Amino acid sequence: MKWGSLVLLAAFLLPGFDRRLGWSSVPVAVVMLADLIVLTRYGLFVLVLKENRYASRVIEVAEKQSVITTGPYARIRHPMYLAVLSMYILSPLALGSYWAVLPALLLIFVLVARIRNEEKVLTQELEGYREYLQRVRF
Image 1 (cartoon, rainbow, N blue to C red):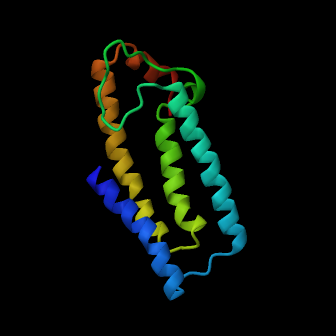
Image 2: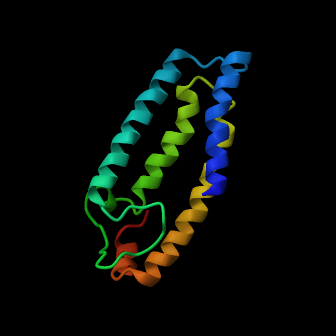
Image 3: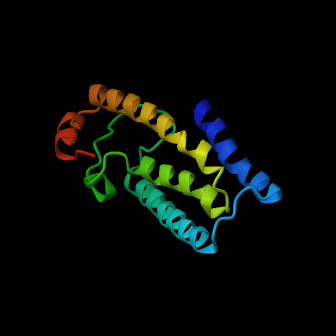
């Protein structure tokens, strides 16, 4: 979480410097497309929270928790991370900065580490998760 916070801080501070110092010239069409995709990813994020009441910043298995297999979880095991990753990688473009995309890309490594840890915990502690892994590949 600490690494992720540093990455996001850089990704959201750099566009201000970029704008002020004129480092990038992102076309309006690219900014608008990035805005649209970020908006749709916020929608996916809300859908994930609606579908999975166990979603949390802390990786743990709650008492009486079950595997969620409906909604976006029917196609992808970690839809919230997909939403967050695309929001944070495209937000610098939505803010008009090519340079800020570079630190945002580091979030991929942060989320891969978190997903690996989460998969380990869920496989060991959540009943039915091994079977879910077989049904939902991504």
